[in-house]
Length: 522
Image (cartoon, rainbow, N blue to C red; front, side, top):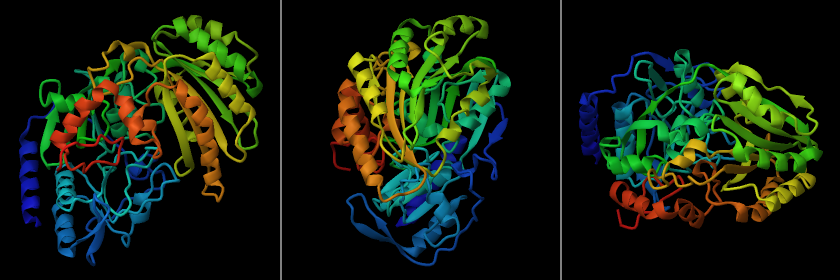
Protein backbone atom coordinates (compact mmCIF):
# COMPACT_ATOMS: atom_id res chain seq x y z
CA UNK A 1 0.00 0.00 0.00
CA UNK A 2 0.63 2.11 1.30
CA UNK A 3 4.01 3.45 1.06
CA UNK A 4 2.84 5.63 -1.79
CA UNK A 5 0.20 7.21 0.44
CA UNK A 6 2.77 8.18 3.02
CA UNK A 7 5.20 9.54 0.46
CA UNK A 8 2.52 11.55 -1.29
CA UNK A 9 1.23 13.01 1.93
CA UNK A 10 4.75 13.95 2.97
CA UNK A 11 5.23 15.79 -0.31
CA UNK A 12 1.99 17.62 0.23
CA UNK A 13 3.11 18.63 3.68
CA UNK A 14 6.36 19.99 2.25
CA UNK A 15 4.42 21.99 -0.31
CA UNK A 16 2.11 23.38 2.38
CA UNK A 17 5.07 24.40 4.50
CA UNK A 18 6.36 26.46 1.60
CA UNK A 19 3.13 28.40 1.23
CA UNK A 20 3.47 31.92 2.70
CA UNK A 21 1.80 32.32 6.08
CA UNK A 22 -0.74 34.92 7.08
CA UNK A 23 1.86 37.29 8.46
CA UNK A 24 0.34 37.14 11.92
CA UNK A 25 2.34 37.91 15.03
CA UNK A 26 4.13 34.98 16.60
CA UNK A 27 2.45 35.29 19.97
CA UNK A 28 1.02 31.94 21.01
CA UNK A 29 -1.64 31.10 23.52
CA UNK A 30 -1.69 27.36 24.11
CA UNK A 31 -4.05 25.07 25.95
CA UNK A 32 -1.49 23.68 28.36
CA UNK A 33 -1.62 20.15 29.80
CA UNK A 34 -2.99 20.32 33.31
CA UNK A 35 -5.38 23.22 32.85
CA UNK A 36 -9.08 22.86 32.17
CA UNK A 37 -8.57 23.22 28.41
CA UNK A 38 -6.02 20.40 28.01
CA UNK A 39 -7.26 17.93 25.43
CA UNK A 40 -10.74 19.44 25.86
CA UNK A 41 -11.20 17.49 29.11
CA UNK A 42 -10.48 18.80 32.60
CA UNK A 43 -9.21 15.39 33.66
CA UNK A 44 -6.79 14.83 30.79
CA UNK A 45 -3.07 14.18 31.05
CA UNK A 46 -0.38 14.25 28.33
CA UNK A 47 -0.29 11.01 26.36
CA UNK A 48 2.83 8.98 25.55
CA UNK A 49 4.26 9.29 22.06
CA UNK A 50 5.13 6.23 20.00
CA UNK A 51 2.59 3.79 21.39
CA UNK A 52 3.47 0.15 20.73
CA UNK A 53 1.51 -1.58 17.94
CA UNK A 54 1.19 -5.25 18.79
CA UNK A 55 -1.11 -6.71 16.13
CA UNK A 56 -3.39 -6.19 13.17
CA UNK A 57 -6.74 -4.56 13.90
CA UNK A 58 -10.22 -4.74 12.37
CA UNK A 59 -11.55 -1.43 11.11
CA UNK A 60 -15.17 -0.70 10.24
CA UNK A 61 -15.48 0.57 6.67
CA UNK A 62 -17.87 2.99 5.00
CA UNK A 63 -20.20 0.19 3.91
CA UNK A 64 -20.41 -1.24 7.43
CA UNK A 65 -18.16 -4.22 6.84
CA UNK A 66 -14.78 -4.72 8.51
CA UNK A 67 -11.33 -4.75 7.01
CA UNK A 68 -8.00 -5.77 8.49
CA UNK A 69 -5.51 -2.97 8.97
CA UNK A 70 -2.13 -4.61 9.11
CA UNK A 71 0.28 -4.10 11.96
CA UNK A 72 2.92 -2.94 9.48
CA UNK A 73 0.65 -0.12 8.27
CA UNK A 74 -0.09 0.97 11.81
CA UNK A 75 3.60 1.01 12.65
CA UNK A 76 4.36 3.00 9.53
CA UNK A 77 1.62 5.48 10.40
CA UNK A 78 2.97 5.88 13.93
CA UNK A 79 6.48 6.41 12.56
CA UNK A 80 5.26 8.97 10.01
CA UNK A 81 3.39 11.25 12.42
CA UNK A 82 4.57 13.46 15.25
CA UNK A 83 1.43 12.70 17.24
CA UNK A 84 0.12 9.57 18.92
CA UNK A 85 -1.55 6.38 17.78
CA UNK A 86 -3.93 5.07 20.43
CA UNK A 87 -5.41 1.57 20.31
CA UNK A 88 -7.92 0.11 22.79
CA UNK A 89 -5.03 -1.51 24.68
CA UNK A 90 -3.02 1.73 24.81
CA UNK A 91 -2.69 3.86 27.90
CA UNK A 92 -4.69 7.02 27.34
CA UNK A 93 -7.18 5.48 24.91
CA UNK A 94 -10.08 5.52 27.37
CA UNK A 95 -9.74 9.20 28.23
CA UNK A 96 -9.11 10.13 24.59
CA UNK A 97 -12.31 8.52 23.34
CA UNK A 98 -14.52 10.44 25.77
CA UNK A 99 -16.44 13.47 24.55
CA UNK A 100 -18.45 16.18 26.29
CA UNK A 101 -21.77 14.29 26.11
CA UNK A 102 -21.41 11.31 28.43
CA UNK A 103 -24.26 9.59 26.59
CA UNK A 104 -21.85 8.93 23.71
CA UNK A 105 -19.86 5.75 24.32
CA UNK A 106 -18.03 5.01 21.07
CA UNK A 107 -14.93 2.85 20.70
CA UNK A 108 -12.83 3.64 17.61
CA UNK A 109 -10.51 0.92 16.34
CA UNK A 110 -7.73 3.50 16.44
CA UNK A 111 -7.43 7.12 17.54
CA UNK A 112 -4.88 9.22 15.66
CA UNK A 113 -3.90 12.23 17.75
CA UNK A 114 -2.57 14.64 15.16
CA UNK A 115 -0.32 17.58 15.98
CA UNK A 116 0.11 19.32 12.61
CA UNK A 117 -1.08 19.41 9.00
CA UNK A 118 1.32 16.67 7.94
CA UNK A 119 -0.09 14.32 10.60
CA UNK A 120 -3.56 15.15 9.34
CA UNK A 121 -2.62 14.26 5.78
CA UNK A 122 -1.21 10.90 6.83
CA UNK A 123 -4.33 10.09 8.81
CA UNK A 124 -6.69 11.13 6.00
CA UNK A 125 -4.69 9.16 3.44
CA UNK A 126 -4.85 5.95 5.48
CA UNK A 127 -8.55 6.43 6.23
CA UNK A 128 -9.28 6.95 2.53
CA UNK A 129 -7.16 4.00 1.37
CA UNK A 130 -9.01 1.69 3.73
CA UNK A 131 -12.38 3.36 3.10
CA UNK A 132 -12.63 3.45 6.88
CA UNK A 133 -15.44 4.96 8.88
CA UNK A 134 -13.81 8.23 9.90
CA UNK A 135 -14.56 10.86 12.50
CA UNK A 136 -12.95 14.23 13.18
CA UNK A 137 -12.77 15.48 16.73
CA UNK A 138 -12.04 19.12 17.47
CA UNK A 139 -13.31 20.20 20.88
CA UNK A 140 -15.40 17.07 21.39
CA UNK A 141 -18.38 19.23 22.33
CA UNK A 142 -20.84 18.15 19.63
CA UNK A 143 -23.99 17.02 21.42
CA UNK A 144 -24.43 14.11 19.00
CA UNK A 145 -20.87 12.93 19.61
CA UNK A 146 -19.87 13.04 15.95
CA UNK A 147 -16.19 13.40 16.88
CA UNK A 148 -15.88 9.75 17.89
CA UNK A 149 -16.85 6.83 15.65
CA UNK A 150 -17.60 3.23 16.52
CA UNK A 151 -14.99 0.83 15.18
CA UNK A 152 -13.40 3.19 12.68
CA UNK A 153 -10.58 5.76 12.63
CA UNK A 154 -11.01 8.77 14.90
CA UNK A 155 -8.77 11.71 14.04
CA UNK A 156 -8.31 13.66 17.25
CA UNK A 157 -7.21 17.29 16.77
CA UNK A 158 -7.07 18.22 20.44
CA UNK A 159 -3.25 18.52 20.31
CA UNK A 160 -3.54 21.13 17.54
CA UNK A 161 -4.46 23.86 19.98
CA UNK A 162 -2.46 26.97 19.12
CA UNK A 163 -3.94 30.46 18.89
CA UNK A 164 -2.11 33.49 17.52
CA UNK A 165 -3.21 37.11 17.41
CA UNK A 166 -2.01 40.03 15.33
CA UNK A 167 -3.45 43.17 16.96
CA UNK A 168 -2.13 45.44 14.19
CA UNK A 169 -4.20 43.75 11.47
CA UNK A 170 -6.88 42.56 13.90
CA UNK A 171 -6.55 38.95 12.90
CA UNK A 172 -6.40 35.75 14.92
CA UNK A 173 -5.62 32.20 13.86
CA UNK A 174 -6.76 29.03 15.57
CA UNK A 175 -5.91 25.38 15.00
CA UNK A 176 -8.76 22.82 14.94
CA UNK A 177 -8.35 21.64 18.53
CA UNK A 178 -8.67 25.12 20.00
CA UNK A 179 -11.44 25.85 22.47
CA UNK A 180 -13.35 29.12 22.51
CA UNK A 181 -11.87 30.13 25.83
CA UNK A 182 -8.41 30.04 24.28
CA UNK A 183 -9.56 32.26 21.40
CA UNK A 184 -10.92 34.79 23.88
CA UNK A 185 -7.78 34.67 26.01
CA UNK A 186 -5.66 35.20 22.90
CA UNK A 187 -7.55 38.24 21.65
CA UNK A 188 -8.80 40.05 24.76
CA UNK A 189 -5.36 41.36 25.85
CA UNK A 190 -5.62 43.62 22.78
CA UNK A 191 -9.27 44.63 23.42
CA UNK A 192 -10.25 42.38 20.50
CA UNK A 193 -12.84 39.64 20.06
CA UNK A 194 -14.52 37.64 17.34
CA UNK A 195 -18.13 36.50 17.81
CA UNK A 196 -17.83 32.89 18.95
CA UNK A 197 -19.99 30.86 21.28
CA UNK A 198 -21.24 31.11 24.84
CA UNK A 199 -19.49 28.14 26.51
CA UNK A 200 -15.71 28.42 26.80
CA UNK A 201 -15.02 24.68 26.48
CA UNK A 202 -16.77 24.47 23.08
CA UNK A 203 -14.46 23.67 20.16
CA UNK A 204 -13.85 26.54 17.75
CA UNK A 205 -13.68 24.30 14.66
CA UNK A 206 -17.10 22.67 14.85
CA UNK A 207 -18.70 25.91 15.95
CA UNK A 208 -17.23 27.84 13.02
CA UNK A 209 -17.98 25.25 10.34
CA UNK A 210 -21.62 25.07 11.42
CA UNK A 211 -22.05 28.86 11.46
CA UNK A 212 -21.35 29.90 15.02
CA UNK A 213 -23.40 32.10 17.33
CA UNK A 214 -21.95 34.29 20.04
CA UNK A 215 -22.93 37.18 22.26
CA UNK A 216 -21.46 39.60 19.70
CA UNK A 217 -23.19 38.00 16.70
CA UNK A 218 -26.10 40.45 16.49
CA UNK A 219 -23.49 43.17 16.18
CA UNK A 220 -20.92 41.50 13.91
CA UNK A 221 -22.56 38.39 12.41
CA UNK A 222 -21.88 34.68 12.75
CA UNK A 223 -18.48 33.26 13.58
CA UNK A 224 -18.19 31.99 10.00
CA UNK A 225 -18.93 35.52 8.74
CA UNK A 226 -15.69 36.67 10.40
CA UNK A 227 -13.54 33.95 8.82
CA UNK A 228 -11.07 35.29 6.27
CA UNK A 229 -9.29 32.04 5.37
CA UNK A 230 -9.37 28.33 6.12
CA UNK A 231 -6.58 25.81 5.59
CA UNK A 232 -7.54 22.17 5.36
CA UNK A 233 -6.81 18.69 4.07
CA UNK A 234 -9.52 17.53 1.68
CA UNK A 235 -10.43 13.81 1.53
CA UNK A 236 -8.14 13.31 -1.48
CA UNK A 237 -5.22 14.12 0.85
CA UNK A 238 -4.48 17.53 -0.71
CA UNK A 239 -3.63 20.63 1.29
CA UNK A 240 -5.86 23.52 0.27
CA UNK A 241 -6.36 27.10 1.33
CA UNK A 242 -9.83 28.58 0.95
CA UNK A 243 -10.57 32.28 0.80
CA UNK A 244 -12.97 34.51 -1.09
CA UNK A 245 -10.47 34.47 -4.01
CA UNK A 246 -8.79 31.05 -3.63
CA UNK A 247 -10.89 27.88 -3.83
CA UNK A 248 -13.84 30.19 -3.40
CA UNK A 249 -16.39 27.42 -3.90
CA UNK A 250 -14.90 25.53 -0.98
CA UNK A 251 -14.75 28.71 1.11
CA UNK A 252 -18.46 29.18 0.50
CA UNK A 253 -19.29 25.64 1.64
CA UNK A 254 -17.07 25.65 4.71
CA UNK A 255 -18.93 28.63 6.15
CA UNK A 256 -21.99 26.83 7.45
CA UNK A 257 -21.73 23.49 5.63
CA UNK A 258 -20.20 21.68 8.59
CA UNK A 259 -17.41 19.14 8.38
CA UNK A 260 -18.46 17.72 5.02
CA UNK A 261 -15.58 18.88 2.86
CA UNK A 262 -12.29 18.44 4.68
CA UNK A 263 -10.26 18.37 7.85
CA UNK A 264 -9.40 21.93 8.85
CA UNK A 265 -5.87 22.65 10.02
CA UNK A 266 -6.18 26.41 10.60
CA UNK A 267 -8.78 29.17 10.70
CA UNK A 268 -8.06 32.86 10.30
CA UNK A 269 -10.59 35.20 11.88
CA UNK A 270 -11.26 38.90 11.60
CA UNK A 271 -11.37 40.45 15.08
CA UNK A 272 -13.18 43.55 16.26
CA UNK A 273 -12.04 46.21 18.70
CA UNK A 274 -14.64 45.88 21.44
CA UNK A 275 -12.83 46.42 24.74
CA UNK A 276 -12.91 44.10 27.72
CA UNK A 277 -15.84 45.32 29.89
CA UNK A 278 -19.49 44.67 29.12
CA UNK A 279 -22.86 45.10 30.78
CA UNK A 280 -24.32 41.62 31.26
CA UNK A 281 -26.23 39.42 33.65
CA UNK A 282 -29.55 37.75 34.40
CA UNK A 283 -32.99 38.72 35.64
CA UNK A 284 -34.49 35.69 37.36
CA UNK A 285 -38.17 35.05 38.06
CA UNK A 286 -40.19 32.25 39.70
CA UNK A 287 -41.20 29.45 37.34
CA UNK A 288 -44.83 30.41 37.83
CA UNK A 289 -44.11 33.66 35.95
CA UNK A 290 -43.16 31.81 32.75
CA UNK A 291 -46.06 33.00 30.59
CA UNK A 292 -45.79 36.63 31.70
CA UNK A 293 -42.03 36.71 31.12
CA UNK A 294 -42.10 34.90 27.76
CA UNK A 295 -44.77 37.28 26.47
CA UNK A 296 -42.88 40.32 27.73
CA UNK A 297 -39.61 39.02 26.27
CA UNK A 298 -41.19 38.37 22.87
CA UNK A 299 -42.65 41.86 22.73
CA UNK A 300 -39.61 43.72 24.07
CA UNK A 301 -37.02 42.31 21.69
CA UNK A 302 -38.87 43.32 18.55
CA UNK A 303 -37.35 46.80 18.65
CA UNK A 304 -34.04 46.42 20.53
CA UNK A 305 -30.76 47.55 18.90
CA UNK A 306 -28.20 45.13 17.53
CA UNK A 307 -25.85 45.80 20.43
CA UNK A 308 -28.23 43.91 22.72
CA UNK A 309 -28.49 40.11 22.84
CA UNK A 310 -31.19 38.61 25.06
CA UNK A 311 -31.95 35.00 25.86
CA UNK A 312 -34.97 33.74 27.75
CA UNK A 313 -34.13 30.52 29.58
CA UNK A 314 -36.36 28.23 31.61
CA UNK A 315 -34.71 25.73 33.95
CA UNK A 316 -36.70 22.94 35.64
CA UNK A 317 -34.77 20.95 38.22
CA UNK A 318 -35.17 17.19 38.78
CA UNK A 319 -37.51 17.89 41.72
CA UNK A 320 -39.86 19.89 39.47
CA UNK A 321 -38.89 23.28 40.87
CA UNK A 322 -37.21 25.88 38.74
CA UNK A 323 -37.04 29.41 37.43
CA UNK A 324 -37.14 31.48 34.28
CA UNK A 325 -34.59 34.13 33.54
CA UNK A 326 -33.72 36.70 30.92
CA UNK A 327 -30.01 36.66 30.16
CA UNK A 328 -28.64 39.97 28.89
CA UNK A 329 -25.52 41.09 27.05
CA UNK A 330 -24.95 44.67 25.91
CA UNK A 331 -22.07 44.98 23.45
CA UNK A 332 -21.52 48.75 23.50
CA UNK A 333 -21.27 51.60 26.05
CA UNK A 334 -22.55 50.31 29.43
CA UNK A 335 -24.17 53.66 30.31
CA UNK A 336 -26.31 53.49 27.18
CA UNK A 337 -27.02 49.84 27.92
CA UNK A 338 -28.50 50.69 31.32
CA UNK A 339 -31.03 52.91 29.57
CA UNK A 340 -31.91 50.29 26.96
CA UNK A 341 -32.37 47.56 29.58
CA UNK A 342 -34.48 49.66 31.95
CA UNK A 343 -37.88 48.59 30.46
CA UNK A 344 -37.17 44.86 30.64
CA UNK A 345 -35.76 45.16 34.15
CA UNK A 346 -39.03 46.79 35.26
CA UNK A 347 -41.16 43.80 34.24
CA UNK A 348 -42.63 41.48 36.88
CA UNK A 349 -41.16 40.70 40.27
CA UNK A 350 -37.70 39.22 39.82
CA UNK A 351 -36.07 37.23 42.60
CA UNK A 352 -32.64 38.19 41.27
CA UNK A 353 -31.17 40.89 39.06
CA UNK A 354 -27.38 40.62 38.78
CA UNK A 355 -26.84 42.75 35.67
CA UNK A 356 -23.57 44.61 36.05
CA UNK A 357 -20.39 45.47 34.17
CA UNK A 358 -17.98 42.56 34.01
CA UNK A 359 -15.01 41.23 32.10
CA UNK A 360 -15.70 39.58 28.74
CA UNK A 361 -13.62 36.54 29.67
CA UNK A 362 -15.74 35.99 32.78
CA UNK A 363 -18.99 36.53 30.90
CA UNK A 364 -17.96 34.05 28.20
CA UNK A 365 -17.37 31.30 30.76
CA UNK A 366 -20.30 32.11 33.05
CA UNK A 367 -22.49 29.15 32.07
CA UNK A 368 -19.71 26.57 31.76
CA UNK A 369 -20.66 25.05 35.08
CA UNK A 370 -24.22 24.47 33.87
CA UNK A 371 -23.06 22.14 31.08
CA UNK A 372 -20.23 20.11 32.63
CA UNK A 373 -18.21 17.47 30.81
CA UNK A 374 -19.44 13.91 31.15
CA UNK A 375 -23.11 14.48 31.95
CA UNK A 376 -25.77 12.83 29.80
CA UNK A 377 -27.32 15.28 27.32
CA UNK A 378 -30.24 15.00 24.93
CA UNK A 379 -31.67 17.94 23.06
CA UNK A 380 -33.78 19.11 20.14
CA UNK A 381 -33.41 22.48 18.47
CA UNK A 382 -34.83 24.68 15.76
CA UNK A 383 -34.83 28.22 14.40
CA UNK A 384 -37.77 30.59 14.87
CA UNK A 385 -38.83 33.67 12.96
CA UNK A 386 -41.07 34.80 15.84
CA UNK A 387 -42.30 33.80 19.28
CA UNK A 388 -45.81 32.76 18.33
CA UNK A 389 -48.34 33.07 21.21
CA UNK A 390 -49.38 29.46 20.61
CA UNK A 391 -45.75 28.38 20.96
CA UNK A 392 -45.49 30.29 24.23
CA UNK A 393 -48.54 28.44 25.53
CA UNK A 394 -46.92 25.11 24.66
CA UNK A 395 -43.67 26.09 26.38
CA UNK A 396 -45.57 27.11 29.49
CA UNK A 397 -47.40 23.79 29.44
CA UNK A 398 -44.04 21.98 29.45
CA UNK A 399 -43.04 23.89 32.59
CA UNK A 400 -46.21 22.63 34.27
CA UNK A 401 -45.57 19.04 33.20
CA UNK A 402 -41.84 18.39 33.74
CA UNK A 403 -40.10 15.08 33.21
CA UNK A 404 -39.31 13.61 36.64
CA UNK A 405 -35.70 13.10 37.77
CA UNK A 406 -33.95 15.11 35.05
CA UNK A 407 -32.99 18.72 34.53
CA UNK A 408 -34.94 20.27 31.67
CA UNK A 409 -34.14 23.58 30.03
CA UNK A 410 -35.93 25.59 27.37
CA UNK A 411 -33.72 28.22 25.78
CA UNK A 412 -34.89 30.92 23.39
CA UNK A 413 -31.80 32.76 22.19
CA UNK A 414 -32.08 35.96 20.20
CA UNK A 415 -30.21 36.04 16.89
CA UNK A 416 -31.07 38.35 13.99
CA UNK A 417 -29.35 41.71 13.72
CA UNK A 418 -26.20 41.64 11.57
CA UNK A 419 -26.67 37.91 10.94
CA UNK A 420 -29.76 38.64 8.88
CA UNK A 421 -28.12 41.30 6.71
CA UNK A 422 -26.22 38.70 4.68
CA UNK A 423 -27.93 37.03 1.76
CA UNK A 424 -28.82 33.36 2.49
CA UNK A 425 -26.87 32.34 -0.61
CA UNK A 426 -23.69 34.24 0.28
CA UNK A 427 -22.49 31.41 2.54
CA UNK A 428 -23.65 27.85 3.07
CA UNK A 429 -25.32 28.86 6.34
CA UNK A 430 -28.99 29.22 5.33
CA UNK A 431 -31.05 30.51 8.27
CA UNK A 432 -30.58 34.24 7.74
CA UNK A 433 -34.23 35.08 8.42
CA UNK A 434 -34.29 33.59 11.93
CA UNK A 435 -34.83 35.81 14.95
CA UNK A 436 -34.42 33.11 17.61
CA UNK A 437 -32.93 29.72 18.22
CA UNK A 438 -34.95 27.41 20.47
CA UNK A 439 -33.29 24.51 22.28
CA UNK A 440 -35.14 22.06 24.51
CA UNK A 441 -32.52 20.12 26.42
CA UNK A 442 -32.44 17.43 29.08
CA UNK A 443 -29.51 16.39 31.23
CA UNK A 444 -28.71 14.01 34.06
CA UNK A 445 -25.35 13.20 35.65
CA UNK A 446 -24.89 9.48 34.94
CA UNK A 447 -26.29 6.69 32.82
CA UNK A 448 -29.61 5.37 34.08
CA UNK A 449 -31.90 2.52 33.13
CA UNK A 450 -34.68 5.07 32.63
CA UNK A 451 -32.87 7.25 30.12
CA UNK A 452 -34.80 5.71 27.22
CA UNK A 453 -37.98 6.93 28.89
CA UNK A 454 -36.48 10.40 29.30
CA UNK A 455 -35.65 10.57 25.60
CA UNK A 456 -39.11 9.34 24.60
CA UNK A 457 -40.69 12.03 26.78
CA UNK A 458 -38.46 14.67 25.22
CA UNK A 459 -39.39 13.57 21.71
CA UNK A 460 -43.08 13.71 22.58
CA UNK A 461 -42.76 17.30 23.76
CA UNK A 462 -40.62 18.31 20.79
CA UNK A 463 -43.19 16.91 18.37
CA UNK A 464 -45.59 19.65 19.46
CA UNK A 465 -42.95 22.38 19.07
CA UNK A 466 -41.24 21.52 15.80
CA UNK A 467 -44.07 22.88 13.57
CA UNK A 468 -43.15 26.38 14.78
CA UNK A 469 -39.52 26.04 13.67
CA UNK A 470 -37.99 26.95 10.32
CA UNK A 471 -34.60 25.29 9.88
CA UNK A 472 -32.08 24.14 12.45
CA UNK A 473 -28.60 25.12 13.56
CA UNK A 474 -26.67 22.01 12.51
CA UNK A 475 -24.33 22.13 15.52
CA UNK A 476 -27.32 21.45 17.76
CA UNK A 477 -28.74 18.52 15.81
CA UNK A 478 -28.96 15.14 17.52
CA UNK A 479 -28.45 11.72 15.97
CA UNK A 480 -32.17 11.17 15.48
CA UNK A 481 -32.54 14.19 13.19
CA UNK A 482 -32.90 12.49 9.83
CA UNK A 483 -31.67 13.22 6.32
CA UNK A 484 -34.93 14.93 5.40
CA UNK A 485 -34.42 17.58 8.07
CA UNK A 486 -30.82 18.10 6.99
CA UNK A 487 -31.88 18.63 3.40
CA UNK A 488 -34.79 20.90 4.31
CA UNK A 489 -32.56 22.99 6.53
CA UNK A 490 -30.19 23.98 3.73
CA UNK A 491 -33.12 24.76 1.44
CA UNK A 492 -31.94 26.42 -1.79
CA UNK A 493 -28.28 25.96 -0.79
CA UNK A 494 -28.56 22.18 -0.70
CA UNK A 495 -27.93 21.43 -4.39
CA UNK A 496 -24.82 23.61 -4.39
CA UNK A 497 -23.56 21.75 -1.32
CA UNK A 498 -24.11 18.43 -3.10
CA UNK A 499 -22.00 19.69 -6.00
CA UNK A 500 -19.18 20.48 -3.56
CA UNK A 501 -19.52 17.08 -1.93
CA UNK A 502 -19.31 15.41 -5.33
CA UNK A 503 -16.17 17.39 -6.10
CA UNK A 504 -14.27 17.10 -2.82
CA UNK A 505 -15.63 13.97 -1.12
CA UNK A 506 -17.41 11.70 -3.58
CA UNK A 507 -16.87 8.61 -1.39
CA UNK A 508 -18.45 10.44 1.57
CA UNK A 509 -15.45 9.70 3.76
CA UNK A 510 -16.47 12.58 6.03
CA UNK A 511 -20.01 11.53 6.81
CA UNK A 512 -20.18 11.80 10.59
CA UNK A 513 -21.73 15.26 10.51
CA UNK A 514 -24.92 16.89 9.29
CA UNK A 515 -24.23 14.93 6.18
CA UNK A 516 -24.50 16.12 2.59
CA UNK A 517 -24.70 12.91 0.59
CA UNK A 518 -22.84 12.84 -2.74
CA UNK A 519 -24.73 11.82 -5.86
CA UNK A 520 -21.72 10.37 -7.68
CA UNK A 521 -19.85 7.18 -6.88
CA UNK A 522 -16.48 7.77 -5.27
